[in-house]
Amino acid sequence: AEKILELILTAVKDLVNYELAVILKLSKNNTLKVQKAQGPLVNTHINNYEIDLKKRKDIMRILMIKEPYLFKEEEDHRDTYEGIVQLPRGHSCLVAPLYIDEKPIGLMTFDNRGCGVFSPAIVKFIGTLAQLIAVIIAQNDSRKYLDSLRKNLTRERNLLLTSDHKKFKTIIGKSKN
Image (cartoon, rainbow, N blue to C red):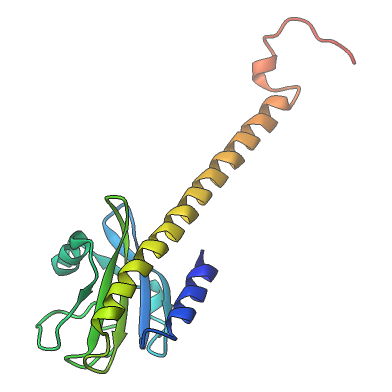
């Protein structure tokens, strides 16, 4: 999935003038963790960055509106990557929640140091893109889960197939082949 996300963000660069694009995945402990970051503003700290939604009610509210949100130039807000990436006051910041049906699975952000970079058409496009990225992330999670089940079943089967397994000790008789 990481390679697919990288390809998508690279292709989107032709349409969306971002300097930082980040896809964050929602974990079970209500934390957003960076899954993929791209652009000239990416630094070594951003790839391990996490946002605790219990401490960031502003981001939690945006996640719950289920629609892309473009911060207004004059809007006073705490930057998503405060202390990680240096962005000027009034920079362009677009945030898009990632959902499958009614379930939030993450957040996607686009930043540019310039003002007024993202048009209403771009905001609408990012909303559509967010839906596609949510599907990619959900499919990858399902694949990982099914792979782990398959590995566990294979391990259990192999244990049962060994002739000296304890389950076979109680079987009466032993046939010779």
